[in-house]
Image 1: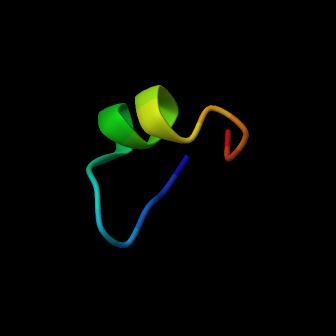
Image 2 (image 1 turned 60 degrees about the vertical axis):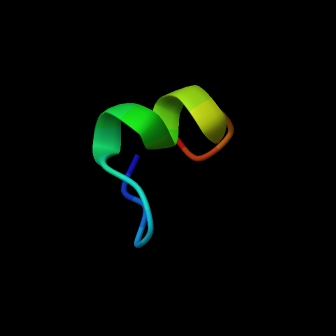
Length: 19
């Protein structure tokens, strides 16, 4: 759940497939 553009909490919200 780590995004290089977004915080971890938002990465789960916007990219739920990248858990």
